[in-house]
Image 1 (cartoon, rainbow, N blue to C red):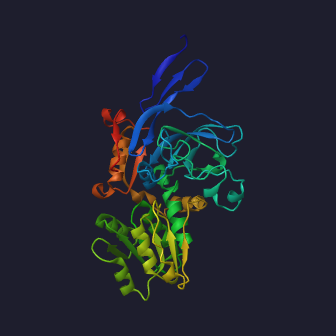
Image 2: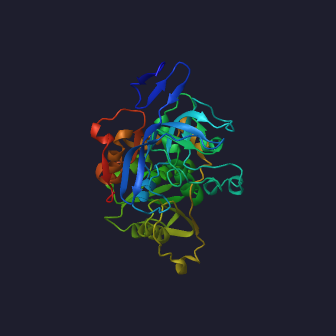
Image 3: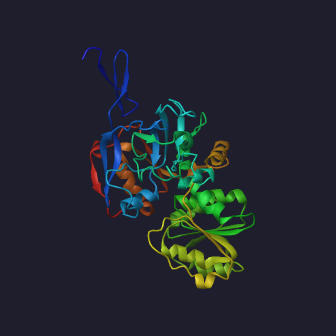
Length: 391
């Protein structure tokens, strides 16, 4: 074809076609696709297109894997259909916007919120973006997500955040989900106050995010409870005052022995009946139990004991209304989410990243960063398909 030439840019895996008048993005891209329980595959899929005037097409630069993604693979979220691109976290560059988008333009560097919000429905007007009537948690759940070279973001004006010039974009991936989740659902719902004694059950990425942001309110004592000594040691570095390995000792007995009558705030950050049980047994009268963990099974709630204790129990899905405030704290250096990052991968090696993240204890993994623009380190990874039923 006259006037057509093929160009490969060495700094990216993406390929473009250029004519004398037009610049065309390639039609397919790499994406991590859910294939049903226990199955994920890195595939070539069509690049998404703007569907509505409020959409923005974002080129992903960095993304990550969440514990919720592992839950999807295990079948804990049956509303995710096979064929869905996973992922709800990431940063990137706006490539195209719908006609109604006013706050963003091509070339803007953005944080992608894990929650999509139209900003106008009843719930959004209450600040409950998680329950947006035309959004909520849909990325990597009900629509294609961010573990890909490109993603289409609905209601872009309310679902993206500008990245300040010169910011460490890798760190800001943590602002898509885990930092707002730990802060809003753990710390704010738990009503952490200066001088409180608090306990966080689970020292994974969400528990660590609660640990980092709880320190905004100067609690006097912070217990971290986990089965992994490596993660507990990391929690100590991040500000925990007391560590309990629940594989070696009973956390309930120890906390009740070391406090007057329990903790002011118990934050559950795992999502298992056993971890919930610890929380309901260590909270003191008038205290708060804040459940962050994603629970796939019922728990034994001891209401016959707790009704008289004047406790408050909260649950919730993050609404990300605190993202702008957290971004300011990260930009100022007062909050350092980069400390949570332990591993780096290129997008073509995302199956390996899942294997590492799914075996976090063995691999000493906390949060992995996936570079969606880098070249693969192993040719086999681009076509590899794995069964991850054991993840």
